[in-house]
Image (cartoon, rainbow, N blue to C red; front, side, top):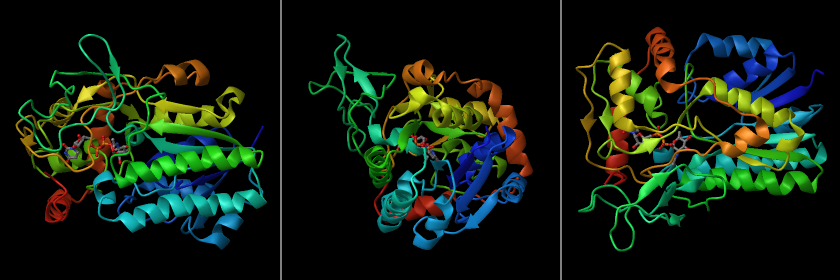
Length: 370
Ligand code: UD1
C-alpha cells in the first residue's frame, strides 16, 4: 500500500538513498531540506530526487514550515542534522540548535498531527568508546582513552595499565558522550523514543555506524573519512591520518542503510526499538587509506600520520548488528572491498574541493587536535 512519508534531510547523502528506495517501491515522499552547501554536493541524483518528490525548502527549526511538512503524512524519517564531530566542538550553538531544537520543533508539529511511526537517525557516536574486554574476558563498558598519546600508545588500557581488546559494540552498551555531536544525537534519539509513544506514535532509532558510498559530501572536511581521503587522493595529496591510523571502525554502505530505514519504517516488531546499523566488519583507518589509494591507482600516496588525535574522537568502535539481524532481518549486502571501485568511480565524476587544510587550521587554532 502506498504511504506518504516525510523525510527531513531528504536531500542529503543518506536522505537521497532513502528517498530513492521509497520512490522505487511506490511511496509518496515529501522532503524538507535546507540544502546547506557544506553537506550537499552538486550531484545530479539530488536534483532528480527533488524533481520526483514534494520538496519543501527550508530549515527544520522553521515552525510554519514544519507544520506544513507533517500535514497528511503517514510516517516520518528524521535525518536532518549537522553531522561533523570535530566541527561540533566549536560550532556548539549551531549543532545544538539544528539537531535538538530542530527535533523539538518537529515534535511540536507532530503532537498536533501525529503520524503512525517515526524513524530517527541516531549515531554510533553516542557510545563513545566501543565495548572492550580484558584478556581475562571481563567486559568493560566505560573505557576512556588517554587524553593524549600515552606511553602505552593511543589505545585505552585498564586501570592497571593492561592492554584491552576492542569487541563489537551492542546496543546495551551505556552511552558515553564524547562530543557535542554525540550529545545532540543522543538527545534526538531520546526525544523521539520519549515523545512519540506519548502521542500514540511508534518510534524507532537507528544508530548508524560509518556510512559511506556514492553521494557522500566530498568537500565537507568534517565528516566521512572515506570521502575526505578520496578527495585528497584525487588532488594528488596524501591522506592525512590522525593518531597512528590503527583506530578501527565499521563502514556500512549507504544502500544497506537505506534498506535498514525501510525495514524500520515497515516492520511491526521494529516499534520501540534501537538498532545498530553497521556492516558487522571492522577495518582500521590505515587499511581504509591504503585500500582506497590502491583502488584509485595512487598507491604511492601513502598516509601522512598526523600523530595527533582530534578532540572528541574515539579510538575503536564497531557494530554488533545481531539485534538488527534478528528483529529487522537486516543483512548487509555490500562489502567494503567490493564497493571501493564504485566509490572511486563516483568520486572521479565530481569536482571536490580539498578543504582539509582549512579544517585542520580551524581545529588547530582552537586547540582541538592534541
Ligand atoms: C563520527 C561519528 C559518527 C558520525 C561520523 C560522521 C563518533 C564516534 N562517530 O565518526 O557517528 O556518523 O563521524 O559525521 O564520533 N580521520 C583521519 N583523517 C581524516 C578524517 C578522519 O584519520 O582526514 C580518522 C578520524 O580521526 C577517525 C576515523 O578517521 O579516527 C573516522 O573518522 P570520521 O569519518 O570522521 O568518522 P568517526 O569519527 O568515526
